[in-house]
Every structure is written in C-alpha cells, then in structure tokens.
Image (tube, rainbow, N blue to C red; front, side, top):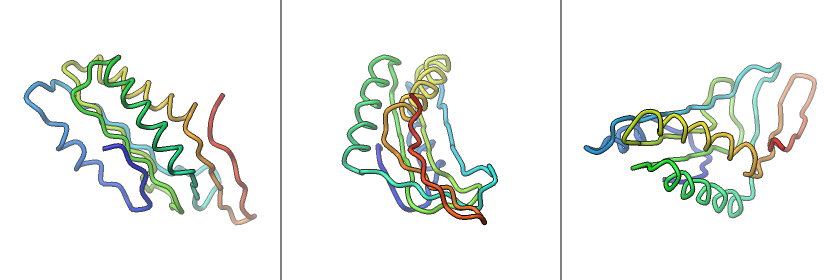
Length: 133
C-alpha cells in the first residue's frame, strides 16, 4: 500500500501483510514525532503530487532492490510527540536488499516528496518545507 492518511498508522498490519513464503527479511522503518523543543507537529502535502512521488519511489525500489512487497504510508495533519508519521515496510528475499531498500526509500522521500511541516511550540508556530536538497 502506498498512501497518505490523516489517521493513526498501525505498522503491524503492514508487517503481517509482508509475510510471504519467498520473503526472507521484512525491514521496517517507523518515523515518529520527536521532541525537538516542540509540542506537536502539523504536516501538509499536495496529496496528488505526493502520492505520485511515493508511487515512483516504490516502483523504482521494487525493481532495483528486487523486493517482494513494499508499503509506504505517510501521515499528515496534526500529531503529538511520539505519534507515528511514516511507516515503510519492505519484504525482500535477503536482509541486505531489505535494509538497503528501506534506507534508500526514506532518503528519496526526504529529498523529493513535497511536505510542509509546521512546528508547534509554546512560543508559536513555524512552517518549514521538509525536503532536503
């Protein structure tokens, strides 16, 4: 599943769906809201563009890393500390491919998917474009 949601994400459902007879390793990344001096985080995206980018990243990862399964679910909206922002679950024949793919997918998301982040603090709010270049 490649999706953007405003609902909480359950990573275990994706881990279960990645269990296949040909899968030797399931690698999971769960990104959470961390305390960087903020109280909450608000993420916004142009959903059509972000979904197209996530699907492009997923297709490339499937081909280059020979994956059996891939799930990328990104949450948007307001989230409090420790809430899940992003789940990436890849199923691969071998762990090396799984780890490499999961890491590559995360870096591609950070580099190319347009996500706007608002830090919510006691002092106020501040918007950032969260892509790295």
